[in-house]
Image (tube, rainbow, N blue to C red; front, side, top):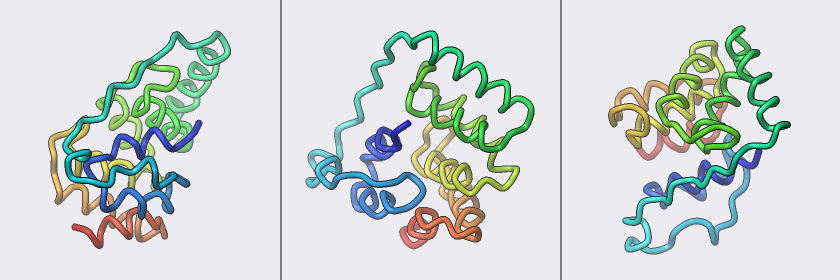
Length: 153
């Protein structure tokens, strides 16, 4: 799964998008980052979710099984799938729930993702204090995106 769709949805943080791209979410081409304030005012378009293939259905089923058994990596991956609408309908509430389960087990990527969602008010009410708390947990484990985000709050 490509991390680019996640960053494309963080368009309301244009000054940070290029910096976050070097963190937990991989590389983004600068052409994907809005360059003017007029562009940043636009909301991202909802993801178009095609009917998943049988293989995709099976992959999600296996991932969900592992996540329900407490596998933090599977929980984090399922959170990203719900955030981006990959193989499942896009659902920020479900993304938060799965990220939280992984984050509470100490997964730095999930902690950073929860911080982003708390800061943006995606799936949860906007809460900068909660975002900072999650960013600090991830930053303490060396997550570069969380460290950069702390510098902006």
